[in-house]
Image 1 (cartoon, rainbow, N blue to C red):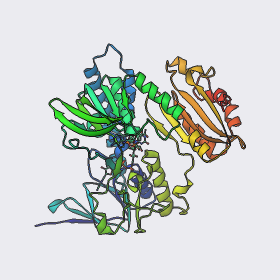
Image 2: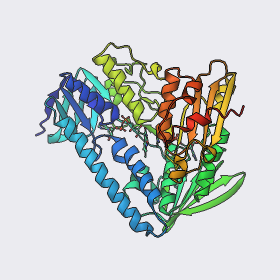
Image 3: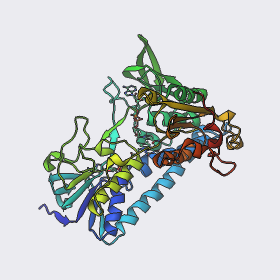
Length: 461
Ligand SMILES: Cc1cc2nc3c(=O)[nH]c(=O)nc-3n(C[C@H](O)[C@H](O)[C@H](O)COP(=O)(O)OP(=O)(O)OC[C@H]3O[C@@H](n4cnc5c(N)ncnc54)[C@H](O)[C@@H]3O)c2cc1C
Ligand SMILES: NC(=O)c1ccc[n+]([C@@H]2O[C@H](COP(=O)([O-])OP(=O)(O)OC[C@H]3O[C@@H](n4cnc5c(N)ncnc54)[C@H](O)[C@@H]3O)[C@@H](O)[C@H]2O)c1
């Protein structure tokens, strides 16, 4: 006979992502009884520490450390083992720190709404029902596989999650899509010794960045040996024994590239399929994201959606900021909104990384702003010996400055350490620090930040 366990909580969190876990910790600390449901025991902590940011950035680190004399397969297998050690430690820490709290419980299983206050987890005798007056949905996103004949069925198709969990380094890899995920994986696997080909549909890489910056980034990737084909339309994938044959059209001509593995990297869609949102009366957008207002409330005011699932920018620090907004609703003054976000920076972790914030030069000109542009190649920056001391002098730094106010409007830093530098620029933009103040500040030496002393004075137009 079927028996179900019925549990109640003050707050139910669905999904152990950055947004949900951050909120769960703060809510338990405030005395709330919290139940968090996570579908997989391999995902405590969510995408970022298990299969996203953390393992990929560790692979960037390992792949850059590979020497010519290292055996590629052995080196790769050791690197994957190192990643596994770190991710399992993080996963265990994530679980213990939350489940170990007196008023928090983590349930492992897939949550499915039965009504607007209740989900079930599991089936039959193991079925658990959780009811709560407040619910936070934090189920993240999942990769999109484009509708290309033969691709979904191909035994060579891999997701980013599959790829980083394999011990075997593919001899060749085709990546469909040259966005964040595609370019980071291209750089990682090429550095490990795989021959990587990127098939990007757009006419150029990094279409949201200025063309001069994108050209330098592309040059670095091509210089590392990555084959980049832009304006490529993949029309079919055929099985060819140990490889897949990927047929694509470019400039009206058909081409074929063969590879052991094919990574689909054309974007990720909100993960809502298992939630049975209809039972809760929660609406989604035409693109499948849970619709939320600026406080991240869904159309059901007691249900919030945080992180990738609400269709916002897919970054861990945005999911974290989503948690701040929801916590402000539940525990604070209720004034924080998504509209408060100013100058949110991004980093593409190729080597060296490309970090950007604010307006591009093209954006600023399109808005009719009166700007000055400061730019210098990293190799030419005399005030930044750090690039020479770590033997990474590739790249360029560029600032867009309001010519009337001297305020910084945007920056693109393709440089060693730029994932750190960009946060200083973002702070300057947020708090109205002028270009002159940033240029004439005291920075440690030798550091990358001291490049600001020089580059901000290199006005090119
Ligand atoms: C390869 C890769 C690299 C990335 N690198 C970066 C980076 O360097 N920097 C960065 O900022 N961002 C990066 N991102 C994006 C970042 O990982 C995501 O934006 C972030 O993890 C989103 O967090 P979240 O809070 O929305 O949920 P997630 O962390 O995605 O967590 C959602 C959780 O919900 C669970 N779940 C789903 N459905 C259910 C259900 N029905 N019931 C129960 N549980 C469920 C999932 O198992 C998962 O654990 C990367 C992403 C990928 C894929
Ligand atoms: N460093 C980071 O912060 C980081 C790293 C990885 C992923 N992420 C997050 O994960 C999200 C998903 O990454 P992603 O790279 O899959 O998506 P993306 O949206 O960043 O890039 C997708 C790329 O695929 C191209 N494309 C689309 N359809 C195509 C087709 N049929 N054939 C060829 N190319 C096609 C697009 O033009 C685009 O360049 C990112 O947008 C980002 O928010 C962040």
